[in-house]
Image (cartoon, rainbow, N blue to C red; front, top):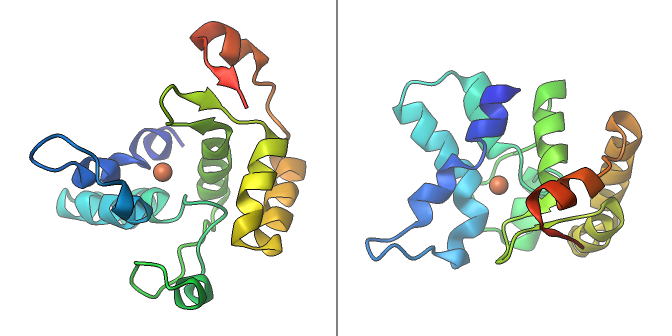
Length: 146
Ligand SMILES: [Fe+2]
């Protein structure tokens, strides 16, 4: 859990160009890029999967095909309890400028654009893992709750 929490977004570093600018147009690929980076560094698959399987509510092979996503056609679905929890916890903050915390209601509304099945999956995870109380974090970090 700790390794997955710390490393799941490491692929974002591969989206920074020589000028130091983040290529937002390829952001969806950061999970796969992180998987590849950790492969090159010799990490085991169970750690690499935290990268490739944390995006949204998971990306299926049919999502890739039907939405024309810029990813190799494959399933990128959280499977283990640890993978699911890292993916779920990741939904409650945003790396926007300034950063924000994201309520369950807001995330459910955001993810709806990727299909009602993603909302159903998110709500099931809310039931499984519980909805976090973000108020202490907004106080501690000074980020807004959206
Ligand atoms: Fe991410």
